[in-house]
Structure formats: structure tokens, C-alpha cells
Image 1 (tube, rainbow, N blue to C red):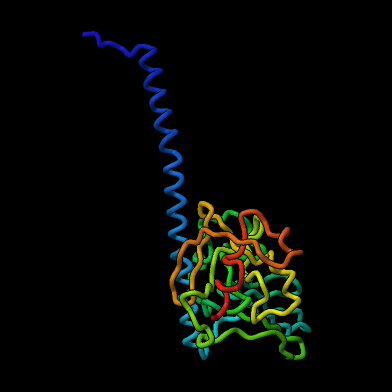
Image 2 (cartoon, helix red, strand yellow):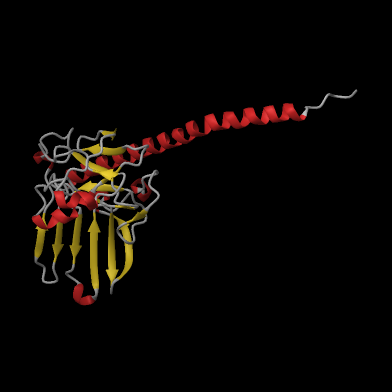
Length: 258
């Protein structure tokens, strides 16, 4: 018994319908994937706040230093750069060791520090995973130990100084151009900054990479997605703010301790 075959016109109609359906479904599938990445990112940020709270409990309620550069062994060619995310040891200018940073107190799954929606490079050499930054305008201090043991810089904030933990952003999606920054900066000078830090403002911005939005985590442990991107800062720095990056508020209200 002979079966009737599809005619050429019928095949063309079927192919047209398939193409139309694919055109309708593909954007939806892509958006769904992006939403999934955003949710993973929010989970990563919550884990960072949990780690910060654990650090507080073990360190007299001080938040982790954002950066501590130890040059006390410079005479032997050794320098230790312990930042909030990674601690690195350099011997005669070459990195010889990289392990979890101050936030993690030496232990973590380092992949938590990779934003799944970020495909760029780390702006800090040697970082295995990247995409997030830490509030250095008000929370994480930056210090240095000279070869003679002299300490300079500013210590981190204590938890009791954060008057409104539900409004103070501690971690977020860091980005400048196509690279990630790890030091989040408010649009105007913060309590832990000096006038020398003004020039760094455009390089401490947030990346709005989740369908045009950015993720943040607050000191109280809450994480959320924000849509508003601000570029207000010192007039001579505005033009340096990269596309799809910006600040979380037009003033310091999203970053400060009030």
C-alpha cells in the first residue's frame, strides 16, 4: 500500500512554522538562562555575607580588611597581598601561592566568587574567579605593613557602627569596562577614604549585567536585584564611568553606615 508523501509546499509550510516557533521561543529561553544566572549570583552574595558574619564573630566584630599588603619580608624578596577574596604570596615579583582571602578565613569553595553572568577578566592579576566587589568606602579597610613593621592605612569598620544593616550594601557585582573590580566605591568620599581615593571612583562601580540590572547584598544578609543605575560623582570623573556600569545611588546612601 502506497503512502501519500508530503508535497513540497507542505514541507515548506512545516519548516516555516518551525522557524517561527524557534524565533518565538529562543528569546524566552535566553531570558530564562539569564534569570537562572541572576539567582545563582544572588545565592553567592548571600554566602559572602554569611562568611562576613562568621568573620565578625571571630575578630572582635571587625569586618575583614579589603586589602592588607605585608612587606615585612621585602628584604628576602617576599611580599604577601591578603585581600578580602584571595591571599597571594609573591617571591621576587612572581606569585607563588594563592589561597582563599580574609573573608573566608582560609577555607571556601572559591567558585562562589565567580558571578555566572560575568565573562570578562579580573582586573587583579592571578584571581582565579571574579565578578564581585566589597564596599571599601565604608566597610573594608585597606592597610599596609612596611619592611620596618610600620603600619599605615585604615582599619575596617566594626559591625556596631553600621546603624542600618538593611540599607548598607557590603557586596555586589563589580565591573569596570570589560574587567571586574573587587573594591566597591561610593560616588562621593566615604569615611574610610582620603582625597587620594577620589580618582578611583569610576573604577569601583557596579556592573549592570543581569538583563540591565545589578545584584547586591546588604549587611543584614539580604540580597536583591536593583535596576537603577547612577552616574553622579565628581564632575571631572563622570566621563570615565564605563558603559553598563554605575553607582547604586546618586549619593552615598546605599553605601554608608547610617
